[in-house]
Image 1: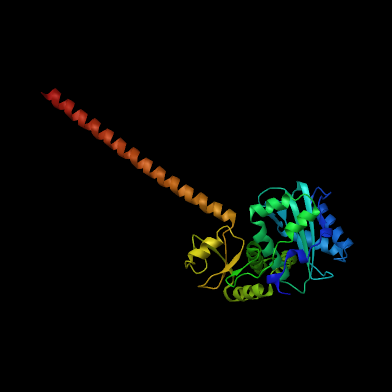
Image 2: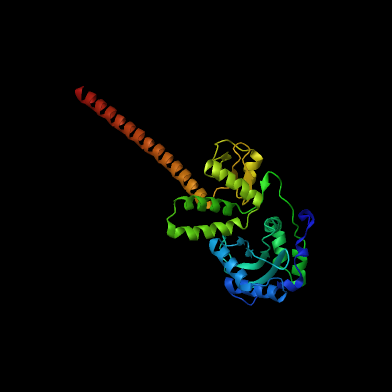
Length: 316
């Protein structure tokens, strides 16, 4: 199968779309969509699939923001991939990064023998959903067939060679877990290894092979780009790449040191912004203080001059 020419419609039928979900919470909604896949005979083990999806949700919410979530799991399916789509007019709490309720759920279950398939699907979804006009068309669909028609336009394609489309936050989290495993007590190893396994299931083998090589050689594989500089080798990346990385969840490769490059996490960005604000504030206070000292000096000098003039007058 040539993913460059594959459309979402090849894996989705109108019968796999629930236009009005009955469920009011995340777990119920996922179960409702899984029931539709069981009914279509696209999956044969609902309980295992549900467990995998919930484990993945507990690791990190699959909500993308803007009212859309993509819960997923890698388990044996009857075919290559099984997709179910659900729409909720009221919205469901998915603990989305923007805090907004989810109105469209795209549930994906794919075969373990094809590890890269989900990445291409996710890349296609991300490119399509990032455009506000496309989201408006999805949310404004009048019925199941219209929603299917819009979703069918989503195309899968391979990422460019210098840019590996994936969940950058997951790769960074994988690195954090690998580092914790090195020094974790025995009672925590099982939990950390479980999380590591969940993340590795979602990543391409080529991505993981390079990640493992870098971890073995240097002790880390992922570096952030701050103000256009790779924090691994302290070399500036190209202006084009630096601009692309900002606010991106894609993974890039440093041309100098070969580490994976990602955008800084929001919490760290906020910390740096606060530091900048505090620095500016401190400098401003310093300037104000110096002005006050200078003003006090001038007043003192004027008073002294006034006193000397008064003494001279009295002496006359």
